[in-house]
Image 1 (spheres, rainbow, N blue to C red):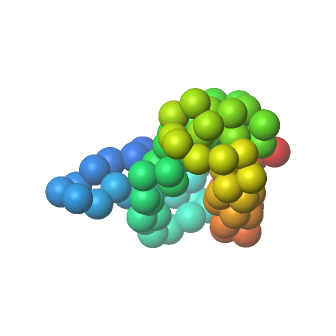
Image 2 (spheres, helix red, strand yellow; image 1 turned 180 degrees about the vertical axis):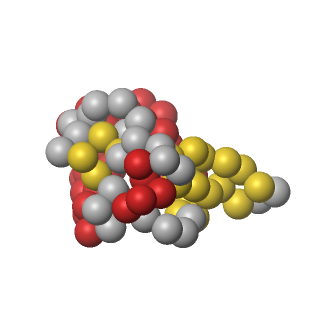
Image 3 (cartoon, one colour; image 1 turned 120 degrees about the horizontal axis):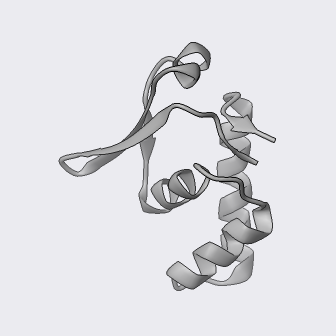
Length: 88
C-alpha cells in the first residue's frame, strides 16, 4: 500500500502539513496537519509499504514498544483509508 500520488509534505514554522496536487488534489481538497510520527509514516508511504514494514521502521526510529507502534500505524492507516488517500 502507499499514499495517493501527488501529496507534498511541507513544514511551515512549527507545523507540518501535507498538501495535495495533481491526482491527489482531485480526490482531496484541503491540507493534512501531521505530528512527528504522522510525518514519518506519511513520508514512508510515498513508496509501497506493508503494516509490518511501517511498524519495523517506527521501532528502529523511535523508542516505543511493538504494540504501541502497531496501534499507531493502524490508526493512521485507517484515517488515510477513510479519507480515500490510501492505495492498496
